[in-house]
Image 1 (cartoon, rainbow, N blue to C red):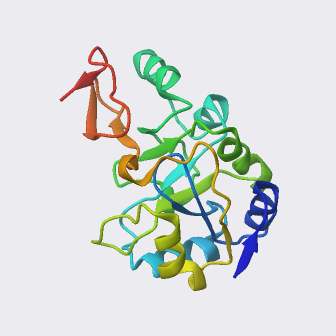
Image 2 (cartoon, rainbow, N blue to C red):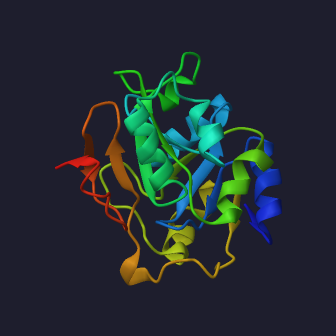
Length: 204
């Protein structure tokens, strides 16, 4: 396991098909390229996760996120423009040809464009959208502290970035991203996150 000194080093290691543990603007996460089946399979084994549950994808911006989508309702596009970058995971219709690990049974894909520029630059540095998943095994709550995540999973990943960014939330405020279904309208909030979705968009 490599201890990485910079975000650039994390991007370079991800580009090689590695699994990297990183701080994020929500909870710490495990990351790998979505188009590297070996890395995705290792990640599923590490998390003891069923292949039936898709991973969310981390993208660098709205434009790259929409490349993963088959079509988007203009109203849903307005939600995406409001939410991204930010702590919102949006469920949208998946385009054909996406790796199976990112596509649900109803042909949707969950995408997030994070707020911090360091995180947004990672998919481009890695060369592909990134699988991003919380640090936990199936059925257990996500670890919200990077130190605890490193202690439990550090020896099972290829690299870890221990740098504490200025934007990293304090532990009492750490929450997973909001999960919003945009395959229907009004949008459905499946999981509340650090920020609320404006009421004009949501069905609760």
